[in-house]
Length: 152
Image 1 (spheres, rainbow, N blue to C red):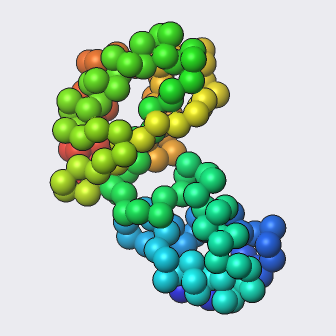
Image 2: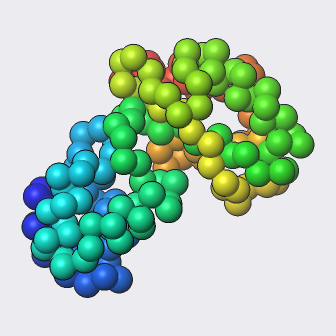
Image 3: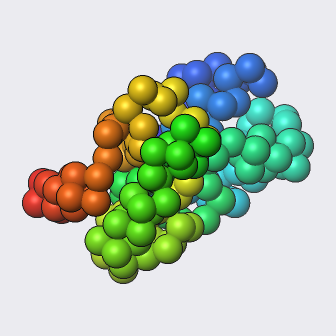
């Protein structure tokens, strides 16, 4: 779907910008917002490019650089930290072979931090795509990643 088609589908209104950016990012193939698409969006919607990039860079769900097909977001809120998210980070970095902000060589996974996922009762927690995983342990992280790799 082109930028113009996305804007037409969502409606050319500033209040629809967030959803339009999600759609553009989903269409990108690398989970990111490309400058040329944002420039096109700016022209179509008559919104300054700086306003669009400012909006996109404010929200952690958007990225201006290419990312993996699956985004692994580890919660870094105080409850998750207290419950051992630092150990979960070590397990994720070991299993994926990347550090926070990096993408695996096969372009399958990008590891990121996120603010509270709202599931403090099952801390530590992470989100991969739209799926939330809680009560994490090193073993559980390895099992989740192995299952996702097997499902490719």
